[in-house]
Length: 153
Image (cartoon, rainbow, N blue to C red; front, top):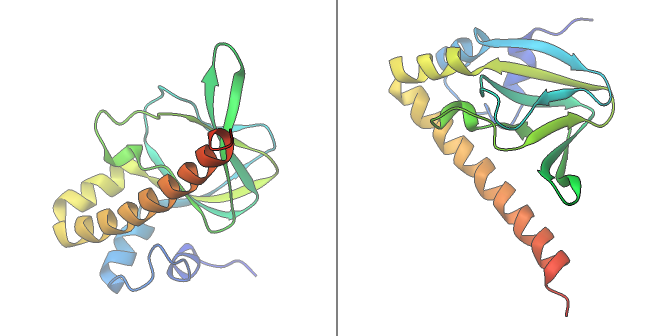
């Protein structure tokens, strides 16, 4: 049975509690996408035009170091959100995101969503509050990882 994107999105915590008209606006920017293992969702420095909700699979967030090559800074999986650079000028990715295994996502067109947020500022405010929660969780996870790496003497 094929589920509609709207049905899938309303079950995700990121959109939970949004007004039905806001969900309809978001669905208008959404599509299902599949990434094979090893394929990049995006690379650092590229234009950030998308926002992803992982439906299944795993995605490694990576930074590149000339001395060490690619370094995984976090691995995300089902239910996680990837990408907020589509909302923050200059709209460029700050790291790489690579599928570790077969990964299914809902891809939201960042230009479409940004435009809808500009037109309906109550939607924009709701999206920013939800993204701020993602920022906070991601920063907390990175803090714990840094303590793990450098906190030991």
